[in-house]
Image 1 (cartoon, rainbow, N blue to C red):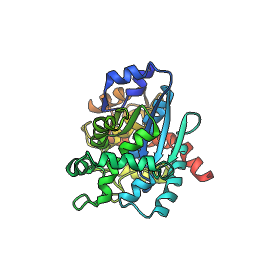
Image 2: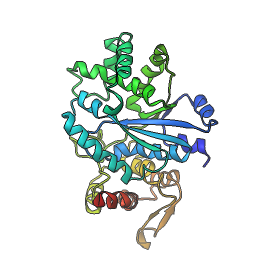
Image 3: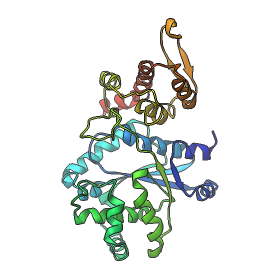
Image 4: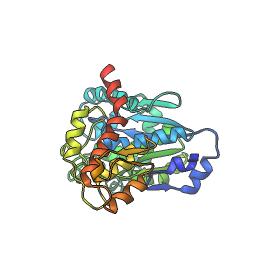
Length: 317
């Protein structure tokens, strides 16, 4: 797989592809993703983390913003609580393999409390309507039926983050799209460049609903083998391939990290079968050649293997 194909795999949108192709010709290129320190790092976060690892392999410098101030503004805890969680989250990122040369972790409050940063926030706040700010937060904000003023500052800060970190591209889930489009539209008005934007899908939780801490429908990168087995055994796995959380786990978490995945089953049920791509596996499942229980079992084994180093790292650190 060439660098461009590696960069775009498992994405749902790039704004714009032509700009990305041009950027890929430049030796030094950078991308950032921001994460609110607010709890366990789970398979939902791992979609963008895997994408950052792809981009690192494709020649990008990676900047991870541990957005403690954003979490505070979004009512995720006190500053002390979110800073403590930021350190834990950083160790989780390192545990799954996002570390080493060309990976930099930046704590939000280390760069967001300067006079220059605050002035840019104020300059942009003069131009962006309250309605635009609220709409950009609808999919990422907490308690948006009665939003706080702090949550209206949130997207503007995210725009200034892109400029402050001096990156070429912003990466996020598709729920970040409205904020990123604000950045492309308004950053040039303060003399900053409009960033490229790359978006990944939002995956279903194991029960087929939106993945969330309140639902408990996710697998944490620090979950034990037994916990992973129990959660996957209960996972929703319809005969359809669309919106199937088990297939999504294979596509976005296992195949990006493993060249082949083996289905282990008795000879009377067809015997073992090896898959070298997600597409091959999906086609077999759609054709009825793989039973849902076998798909769950294969996915469980793959997930346990993919997260093995993370469990060891978290236990040692």
